Length: 227
Ligand SMILES: Nc1ncnc2c1ncn2[C@@H]1O[C@H](COP(=O)(O)OP(=O)(O)O)[C@@H](O)[C@H]1O
Ligand SMILES: [Mg+2]
Image 1 (cartoon, protein in one colour):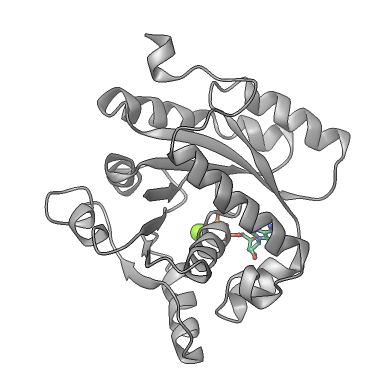
Image 2: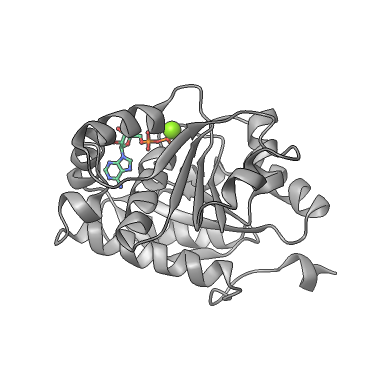
């Protein structure tokens, strides 16, 4: 299972979520590869801090725009149960390369309608990739949500019009995410009883089901249904 966290906007939680999902998979006993595809290197730095702690963690590697080529990531990923790619916050060769090799693309979005509008460009890139590879499954994840506000509700409605499924799992805006990353851990290890940990476990579970073909209630046109 290869999952890419992608999208054009920075600061929406791609790296944080990718790292926490990877760490959650490690805790569940999976062999996990975390690919840092962002030159900014958030995941790599986290990996260094994690290694200093000397606890079982994901293997972290940096890869770029050639990761889709034969003998690259696909081959490396065969030694792991789960591969997570943290993409850079812009469109370009690296993002396209990640979409050529992933099974699932997750588009994190903030909880406001303007966050949802910012996904438009990314949706085009996803559709292009799905024309080349109709096995690529893509979904939207609402992150950094402050509470169950009316604003959050409307974001879900705007996001649902994108044609991509919006995951039922949502991540709240919680300090535990920031503290866990700084400590070289995922939230499920850092504070296992925090609501953040519960959210990440639910997200991991939903991503696995999505990968295995689960349809998300409501709202989407798959490539196949679109003909
Ligand atoms: N669910 C969350 N709750 C609180 N803070 C978050 C959450 N997700 C991300 N952040 C914070 O938001 C900022 C941007 O997150 P990051 O994961 O680096 O985004 P991206 O990779 O999309 O640029 C960071 O300071 C991070 O700690
Ligand atoms: Mg990032």
